[in-house]
Length: 254
Image (cartoon, rainbow, N blue to C red; front, top):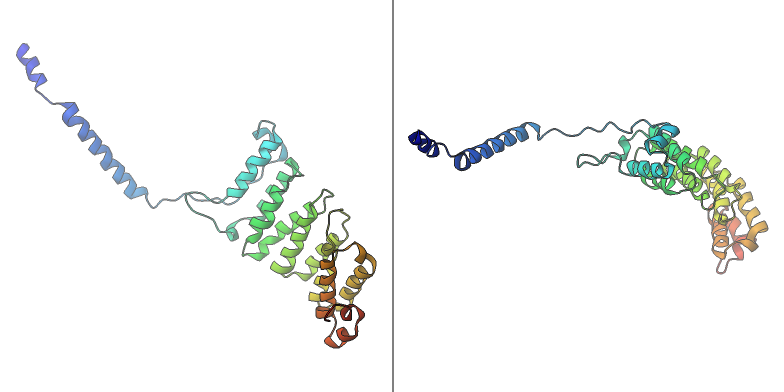
């Protein structure tokens, strides 16, 4: 019996041979798995369906502000998964619009989501997709709170200079000019005239700008007055008309 025990002690040494063998086997299995799975990539299912307002709040344990921030971060980083970045042209902008308005129900005063919509998602190269963004900014930009008007101004910019839609941009510019928010600068009321010039309707643009000079010049910054004069003299009037027009000849050096 003692001889058998002594033999067992001289038998297979697991700590010396078994453990290294097990580690080598695990390494071989890991390499085999990697060779089969290394080309697999996480697939992106595009913009997820938007929940209801009630469902969104319940998911955040009744905290609307936490929901606004969590969903906002989700929208900010949406599509950036698996070490890859998704081109903005691949996003479903109709679904994004639903998310923007959901966020508005959670916090209508914050400018975080409007800024994300205007300056981030508004940079897409697929210009037709911008319509849902413009629709959203149009609604937000007509709010009476300070600085909300700038989102409507951004909608005008996207419609006019990115989509080159002179009809929609004029409608938006007219809404912007008709706002009565106290902190709006004078150039916001000039926007319809600028678009009318682009449409070739120079007489209507002239009437708008001249009306501003005649009625509001005392309340305007000198730089804004010079801008209006430049538009009248350089873009609306012909050189012959500008040479004799009082607005143009009153400019020093004009």
